[in-house]
Image (cartoon, rainbow, N blue to C red; front, top):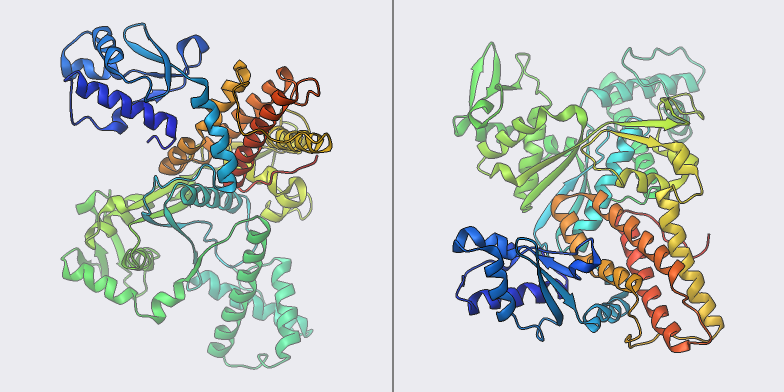
Length: 553
């Protein structure tokens, strides 16, 4: 989907030419592909529309291209010249002011540059992280947080109406075991005998919470009855653990709009009516004392148990109620970011959505593949600080938020990933986050130097004719498209790739083009405007993946 002005103008000009040639009248403008050629000799922009029309028109593509070139309004599209290449590629060379006009656009829009209405306000609910509130967020959660938050930032910039949601698993056995573990440590805090449950939690954080509870309530719960004790320590344990999660996510520059409690599904009676709906529609049956969901009728590989023979729910049952709740709240699409062990979850949940009367395509489940931490070529499994599993806190302390977030965003989330800690710590151009941030700091340095020399930013750019300047301008112009494309495919790594290319093009421009030249102040002013436009674009791009743009390094 083209959302930048140059490509839209080219597509509209080509569409008009097609109509003028009596080729086709109802051709969708978004079916026309416009690309930036790798070779400068192939033009500023290129299209294969002549080849696309060959099958439809049953004509030679070069002949189609020749007719289109004859019919296109070059003046209206700001085209300087057009050539045909190979079997029928149409290569378009733009007027310089068509490219330099992007500078004014960036300088005017500033922090809003890159945003569009490509998403047309479609309501999305994106659920990510959703770790049990029973301990620290580990490596997998760090990836989920970085990728999920980046997706939400990118989609919002592309005009989608995005809600970020965290599902609090606070109703299962893990919370019961948390309560028992806390009670044991609570007794320990008084110097009393205690017994940790077999599946309990042994971390230092449990001891710390127990001490805080002792300070707050004294010995009130030492002799409480079992139900009262469990209810209290469930509530307190969840509260403390959840606050820790919120605090570390905030430090990681991740926020959620909605924190949805699983317990609320039971308190607000959402689970039983969901089961009843499936029963009413004829999508359940009883077998061996259990209630089954006919998920195979909707493409699942086997039917799924909803209520076990002992009367308890499987984990799937409240999950179905939760997804129904989200759709009933008015979201047009749901996105779940889940770990690599959840592949089997996709078909059963899509089956449930469809059985309940919604379109299964309204649920998108993105699987995040495993991350392996590497340092000096060796696998790192445990934190050097604690000797336990690596946590978000470890990563923040070791390499910082910027490097952690950039490295997680830089690789397609659905592929396994080796996270190179050695590279992430290095201050060299091989480190992609350092390379990008250094480019921004260099731009800021140039702008400060210009201010000291009383050189201001120009508002006209006729002197910008260098190939390196043009390459930089064309890439800046692609930013809006890149965001829209990355949002549509939920692919933060595309933004990371864009950032690397932008930094590369800037460094190349900087090495070839003398920006501040007291002997040629007018050219300096115009190049300064290009530097500022590049800086704004880079800062906005880094922000989309939660990375800061330092002014000094």
